[in-house]
Length: 386
Image (cartoon, rainbow, N blue to C red; front, side, top):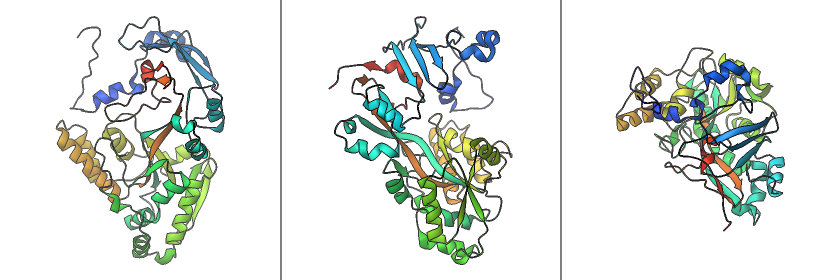
């Protein structure tokens, strides 16, 4: 091999490896800088990378500044001379105000501002919407009562009106989900398994009755843990379960670290999670979050041997059709056996100034999410407005 070729040797065929190698978490780290500076190797002046941009200033909790790297000799040299990322909460009122005052060129948008921005004759034209491969779902303790009974899990899944949740609570910013993989993602089932978790109050009540809890009577105390303040989304889910099943779910609050520790110890009866894709392969969105693991290595305790078998074999299958068919069967099991209750697939909403150019769709029809994909910065340039 020559000095410019990166070679990976695997024990088994691993068709997802090219995606993993391109994932931003696989960026090379300069061992000589780490040895010299320790944890401070990422400070401005010490940080060495193979990027077309160079870190020139980092004010913790405030902003980070990059400039074109004069030592870069690769094909993606970049055009914008300086980029500054300001650490406000993405899409917050502060960020949107800064955008309206022309202090920043781009920000994401949250539900608090979406209706106003859509109506605004100027901002509405600068609003970009695209699927962001992420799924929000509920997990439960599936190895303990009452959720060890699949009829209970199915009852809860059929009790939640995802259409209303997306339309009313999220103001049309997300797409209802009935399985894990978002539309457009490799191996996505789309609405193929929708019937497994679709809103169906009569079926939900019947299943709960079959499980031994007619009209919710005798249902044990269940706590729905969250981190931070109770959101409209959590309240809506709580109310839907009460209205359809006559089951009271108590909302409990934990500090985020404590919630994470309890999840990994399988001590959270019920909580809300989201999984953002790291790379566009079902190995990431099906195997990573859902393949069963020993306590301490995963956030949920769902176990299904057939699901494990499908994703394990798919991970090393080189025939694309057979591989996708295996993931399809895995997703069917995940939806029908209610490993999780899928709520919605996320969309990204960006405000971008008309002079910010070069943001292109990839071959999957997906726009890069600039907050997490700095490797697309070299495509950006400042151009004339239309």
